[in-house]
Length: 475
Ligand code: GDP
Image (cartoon, rainbow, N blue to C red; front, side):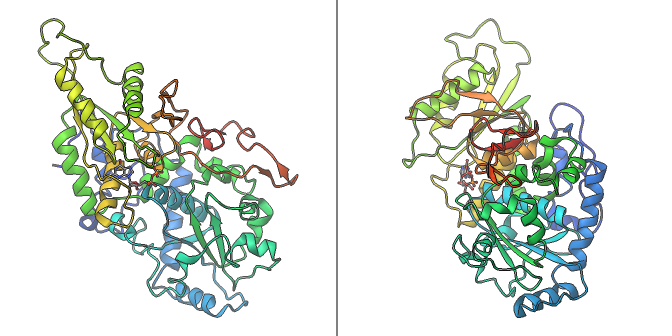
């Protein structure tokens, strides 16, 4: 059965409020697309009518200009030859280069997609090792995968901050931009001040002259688009609820392939579906030693108990057991199994103060990040997705893995601050301001006045993040 929904009404709207197109897909080749709705709670955030219209229009652009079309062939020909003349067509392209950990990749594809929506560009994805193994096609009757015979296929991985084709270096070297040259956008966390001019209005006008853009990024740069006067009115119309940007874009774009969907549903149905409440705990430790660490365990325990997410343990069972005791399932995700093992034993060895039954699970413990392995990334994607199906979510600060889960799930997480000097931070965690991801390395520049400015203090809906004080996020 597809509807293993717990407690409460079943979400029958398989299009997620109109977000997903209803035709043009083969249902069996991507089971998750229209079944997500049955696993998620009914989420209060609805996509705006304007966003829905814009998505349908974008789908037809992707189809009209995408791989296999005459327009695509002509545009590739222009890229190959570098010819300046502007032939009659309005197909422009943004190529996303596969790079970094899976959480980062998901956030940058979403950022790239939003930028394509705003600038009417066709988004094409470099499949890298496994993008096509993890995600279904999001656009009907076309493909978002960059064809393998794309002229720059072998060059994509070599673009870097020093490439002469980067926008930053074109500015530095005063190279003009015309239809025939492509621009490489270097939006990596280590980018320089010239690369950051991408976020300025005048530069955006220049960049739009190029038919082809290549983007390499590991950051969720959406918040800065909201500060750009060329985009902000449209963004406000698209997203009346500012903290639901990734939530909508993520649910629109990222559908697990059948292999990953199998991992998700088998796990959910076996271990989580019957619980009265599911608490997700994502543990990401940025240390060189593999751990487990005492201070991280202490942080998890004090966070979940102070915030009333998990019950305290007591020495003796209090009173007679009620006929129906509330059950809580705890879903851990971590590269390490130590935290999960400890908490599981804790709730086995002692009764809880509330009488609740706490079962503790963790799907995998891969030991270390292995972003080049397909099976590893399938599990990572399945685990992010499973976390998004929880009722309450605790995440580790700084981690894009957690950001993806909270955004897809529409969950405002309790965020565990990153420990310093291997001690438990005080407080160990706090409820986040919004479910949006944090932009870790934003520009701090006023494009008009050409001087530094605190971009986390300009408008009420773009604020500094709780987990990374110099980052910014939508709230
Ligand atoms: P970030 O580094 O935490 O921002 O997240 P990323 O997803 O970009 O990179 C971390 C990578 O490490 C993931 O993509 C996985 O490959 C791996 N990883 C980290 N935490 C987990 C986990 O809890 N479960 C699994 N399966 N993999 C993880």
